[in-house]
Length: 443
Figure 1 (cartoon, rainbow, N blue to C red):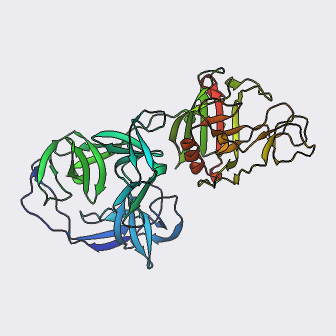
Figure 2 (cartoon, rainbow, N blue to C red; figure 1 turned 90 degrees about the vertical axis):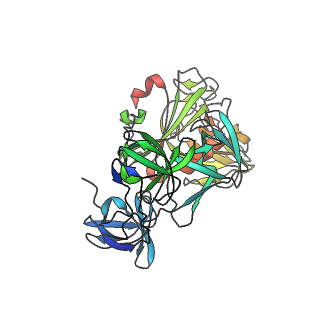
């Protein structure tokens, strides 16, 4: 059964022309839109939200059989007029009586970085195949975690969504289709047209069972990549079905408790300084992978038993502490502290302030401390290791910027650190797990 939300109905008049003389589709003509459509709530109660997604706040509700005033469609959400303001409801709980679909909200994707690498896959560990520049408009195909899949000079490329602004002509931009959906032709023959409507010329056809490369949806039409050019097919004759998601490593973890965000740092063995960093988030009860990146550990790899100054990174599961940086908060929801020239982290095991963030001068309070005002700490966060401050057990364990090796922390590129900082949400009880691959069954 579907989750109960809210049900309603609405009548919208769409000035859509009916064009005779359609091409054949499996012996049937392509459907023209009905002129009048009624949108009616099917759930006993349906939440109205401030944006197109369950992460947006609830601004009210509608009830079963209520008629809705639909403005447009954004993915699986209807934008509606709700008590004189704009609201959004899940289309899963709204029945449209006609064949027409409200217009999709248009989205423009614009590069915000001065120069942004285009990579061959969704991660910084993939090779750069070129670049785009500030203000450039992108042809986005889909979104995978924090990466946009784009059409780039006739080939497929990926860019970080952190440096792309998605802006629509309305308040809630349409989200491109997820990559995990398969689109299959159900008609014996289906015309591919030059625009989203039967009034546009046919530029070719596809046949039953053929898989389509869908870019986006506009009303009841799919925009597709067709033999190297853009085409449109009626969604009435295309079946969209989710493909089976592969099992993720976090699916087998038993120690996550109420954590809904996980940073997983793995290495092939204890002695390597090279690491793989993956992030996962639980959405609607299911784990989703968000990011994959290359990283580095301590110079001597992982520690079997961490000791102060051993140049090894601790293994284990830890909570996330304060975020920090030499610059202003990049957009993280974590508590954020801007580093000053006087900031240090005490690594003197004999000091009562061992493994804490302090400020100079020492005034006899410690004999050694790590300077925080360094490029490696341009951005990062505290890994809550040795919170009991056991002398000699290790101190100043961070996740920060770096690409060579560390003195016992975990590091990756500045781009990835910022991306992870923006993603982390203390309300989701994030944890970081660090382990050789062979010992993941401990978690």
